[in-house]
Structure formats: C-alpha cells, structure tokens
Image 1 (cartoon, rainbow, N blue to C red):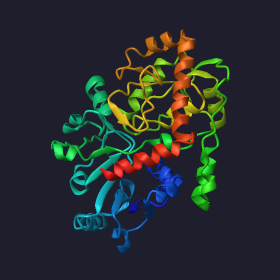
Image 2 (cartoon, one colour):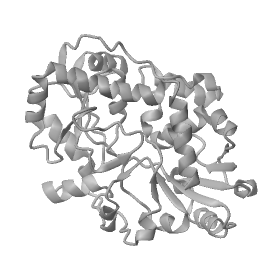
Image 3 (cartoon, one colour):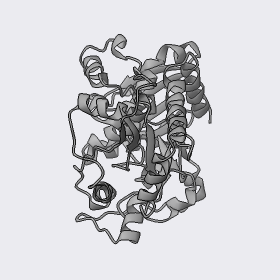
Image 4 (tube, rainbow, N blue to C red):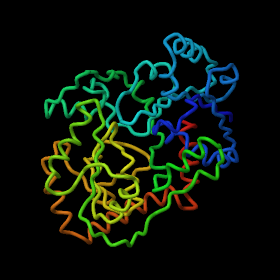
Length: 357
C-alpha cells in the first residue's frame, strides 16, 4: 500500500507537524515490512496523487496562497474514489476543526479530540473548548476575536479520528540538538530515544512551574497568568535556561503544567522523563493516544476554574508516597511507548488500524 504525505519541508519548526511525522520516520522500515510504504512530499506534483492513501497536513495547506490552496483542494475533490483522502490537523489543541476540510476529506486526524463529539456542534470562543470556558466563566475576551466552526452533522463528526500526540518524541535535555542535526543531515541515527533521568533522584523541592507567557491571545494566556498569581509566594515561575530547568524539574516533587496553545504540553513529557508528579488542569474531557492522562494515577488534576488549585497542591504535598506512585506511573507509561521493545509494535498497530478504518 502506497501512502503519500504532503507536509511542510521544515517540519522541525512546528511541534505539531514534527510530532506527527517523527514516529513515521522512526518506524518507517517496520511499516514497510508490513506492506505500508510511506513517502513524504513537500510540494504538489502529479506523482503525489499516484497512491492508495493521501495524507495532507494542515501547516502545508495553510502555507499556500488562496489560488494554490483552491487548486489543490479541487484536485483532491476530483481524485479517484479508490484513493483514501485524510486531512492531518497538527494544530495543538482539541479545537479549531475546519469544517470545509471535514467535508472534502474522508477522514480528519488529530492528535487529541474532545471525547464528546457533540461539543463540536457549538462554536467555541477562541477556537478551543477551554478558551470558550475562560471566556464564559472568567469573562476573558481576546483583542482579536475568533470562533471555531460549528460541526452539526453526525456524518462529519464521525470523520474525526485520534492519530497520536507529541508523547512519541524525545524531549530530554539534549533532544533539541539531535533534532536540529537530523533536520540538516537527515541521518536517522540522530533520532535518539529519550534518556530518562535517575528515577531515584531525591526530590528536595516541592514543585516546579516555569511559565512561558508569550501568548498574544488573552483566553490562552489567562490560565497561566492565574497560576502565576496563585504561586507568587510559593515559587519562582520565571523562565530559566534549559539545563537549570531540567535540574530543577528532576529535583521537584511536583511539576505544574497548565494549558498552552493546546491542552497537551511539552512539559508533560519532560516531567515524565524527570520522574516528577505531573499536575494539570483536568484532562477527562479529552481523548488522545497514547493516553498519558489517567486522573490520580498518572497525574494530579485541578479544576479549570482553578478554585481547588491550592487545596490540591497542599493535599498531595502531604502524601510523599502517593507522589512517588504517580510519578513512577507517569514515567512508566512514557517508557512503555518510547523505550520498550514493544514501543514499535504499539505504534505500527495504531497506524495500521487507523489506515484500515
């Protein structure tokens, strides 16, 4: 089976695209052994459409000017019915579903989606369900307002499928160096497995929460500003260099990881690598794969309104045994999908099952 993927050439600069393509590069030989030959394309040429399955990534589509995008979508609409057409939405969150692409493509892949598809039937302020919550509950408004598309038809909602999240990438201390080397040299040996830090490192700090606030959207930034305020007398939340950050995280009992552009953040996986206890806004509304978010087992949750934030911190900090159990469980899941012999099998099976749908 020939699978063509149309994506931006410099995908390393976009974490969502990089998260999507990385395991396909890492496990392409195993997929080929199973009969699935994957070939990336970085521009639209006629041979792109000579395939069994065509995947089109959203960053590529967004990079085109109006006429080029219109022509590409017209070609996709007129493709042979036997060619399966899949749109790959590599945006960060569960939101921002593009209705037009749902109509054109046979399937719509995302790394994470809302479990209750009916929630997509309403337009969300700020394009995401959690930004809509911040708008409604806290009355936060964006200086540049937008809303997501309403997806009211069941047959369109059924097209939305979960592919895989960014938890299959190496996010260890030196990962960015190897990612850059691979981007230049295209040598697969630079696709390093993550290096877990010592799981028995004594935890001398209560918590770590270094916050980037570089968001121009108020409904995105709000949660982080609120947490910064709640922690102002507890810990320093200013950014530090990468080495100091990892040293701090590895010595911290808790790692607080609020939402950013999306619900899933790089910090979640840095936390597992450092064997700290992940603390996040409640993830129970979200479906993703691998599922790293099992409440009170792989992470500690707090409410989106943050009214129980301090209580949750105080309670868990008094339970060192529980912290250790949650930290270990989170790290074990990350190891399972990245560092075990079976990791490759898990991904290959996931990909084949998605393709066969």
